[in-house]
Amino acid sequence: MSRYTVNDMARLSGVSVRALHHYDRIGLLKPAFLGANGYRYYGRDELLRLQQILFHRELGLALDQIGRLLDDPGFDRIAALAAHREKLSGERERFRHLIATIDRTIAQLNGEQQMSDKDLYHGFSAQKQAEWEKEIVDRFGDAGAEKVAESKANLGRMSAAEMEEGKREMEAINMALAAAMAAGDAVEAPRVQALIARHYAWVCRAWKPNAQAYAGLGKMYGDSPDFRAVYEAVRPGLTDYLAQAMAVFARTTLKD
Image 1 (cartoon, helix red, strand yellow):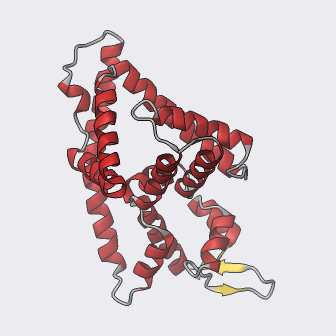
Image 2: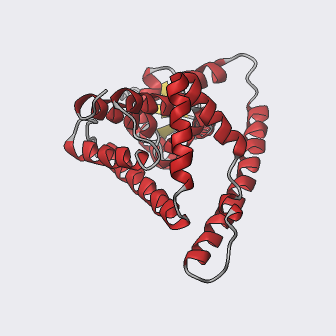
Image 3: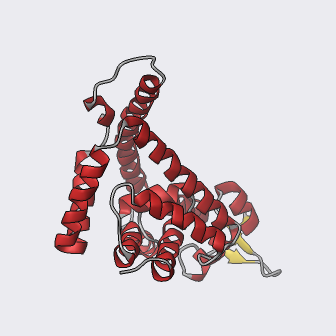
């Protein structure tokens, strides 16, 4: 039987040793056994369980939810993989359309082809947008509804070039936050808070939240499977790191 140390597991999966130790502590992924030297050793079952953990993280589930799911006596690994495949196949088709929209937009901005205004939004999910808007209204009530309307109006006035620039800025912020997280920077660190200032400015392109609303937005990122999936795809744990950093920025920099 193959056996792997925690360092081997980290190299195989791309999951950090620190994260694997955390999974062990919370009972999400225990090693197959501890060696006489005190090292953790993992086998094939643990590799497959880690794969399930990563699949469910990609789909936006929190670690405690994943633990309950995998430990359910009725959990069927093959059925779960089939469900993952079906969902990812649907997402692949949606992403194919989004990539085509990006390519056509770039070609238009370069003067290489024409593109209708309607085609700028081909591939975006109206259902997901409606779900996000409903979540904001449910969480913030009438004030949330006003902000949704404000955001739509502001975004509607943006050109395709401005929308593309905003997308690049968000990607740059996310990557820089992931690097700061990997370096072990605390969410209160000046470098992190400078990045959050950029994030706040990015949000203000659509609507200007006060301290309470900005901290609430960070909490919504963590509570929403869709938003969590976006940030976790950049780096596992980034969603909570971002939300905590946003809360610090709201408390120390913004006003209610």
